Image (cartoon, rainbow, N blue to C red; front, side, top):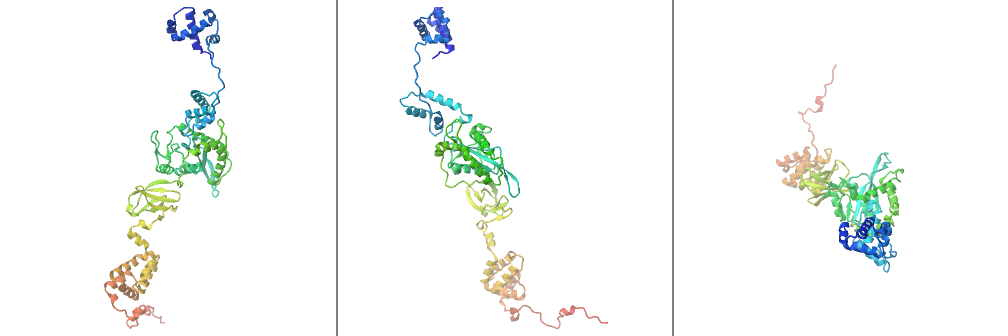
Length: 522
């Protein structure tokens, strides 16, 4: 093996000082910074080869090295090759180390000349350095999922109005296998991020240990290099799936290089192909993306064996945690203060809560279909979400007893109550409910009659209603006056009781003809 040129110059100088200047080994070692043993070794080799300084000075470095390296290197046999792509892929499995892979390499090539551990690691290092920069990070199987949105968008045309809406493309990439998912969402809101994430996990059929997004305001309440704070909806989603969500460091795209490359691949192999077709629904666009996604994941790697799909099936899928029994329904949370009418406002609609929470602060969990109200971590109410603005959704159990009792009255209930007292009461109640434009306008009068029944009894009320109807004074006040003056206890005249009031004939009564103009005389 040739001696390096710097060392060869020292060897030549060592031999010159000895053969020509006849210095001691100790002085030569001090002058050249060598040990006396090295000086002695090369002087002995030059003497054994019969070399003197005039002859050595005329030789080049290679000739001197050939003369002085008297023990030629051992002849090396061909060493067993290392399957570097396989080693690189196996390192992504959890718990697999280089030491283990080297031992397996040696066991698989027993009886053959193999590389030592140091050389094994060096070959692996050189191979890894030849790959793309984003592939140099060592990702453990099933550990990390990187998510982001692509910059370019696609258009979705409303077929009724012709309005163009931009579709934003959500991209997710698994760290170990680079298995990729993409879908279109109407925007990049909190619901869009969480819906894209839940669809990704359903597509993979499992849950990674860690999700790495950027620092979008939709997910991260407080971006921080050391202690980022997730918002409530993001934290609940992570707890539902039993995973962690840890955003990349602010302004450090290299922390999520996988998805940066994944976004670039999606833009080139999916969005570029969909730039000409016209889509009228998000469903149609997502079907087109899904078809191209199958082709993307099946494309073979350029510098590695296999494809994203084969690596996912081999490495990532076995390491993913199982999905929960119930899928997560994306939701947003909103703090609300309970109004004096025991309702809270969500998107212009009003939902009831127990009246005991009036003026207190609660939290609304809002999904596409439901509105749940939480207080002190407990669910206190749940409503079907309504798009009607300015309207109310009220549960009777949330109302105070007095309000609930008032709400429970209806024309049928008043009439049924009147029937239990008597025909005259039924007749008067029916009159009170029908004489006004709306039955509810007569509720108070009917409730007043109910109060009179509790005060005077059903029999006296029935008699008072009969007298009020007979005299044509058909109001609650008239019935109350009859009861107060005990007129209900007097018998009704037969004529009055059976017929309406009729004006009697009398000489002192002028009658309607009195006011007519007298006939004109000529």
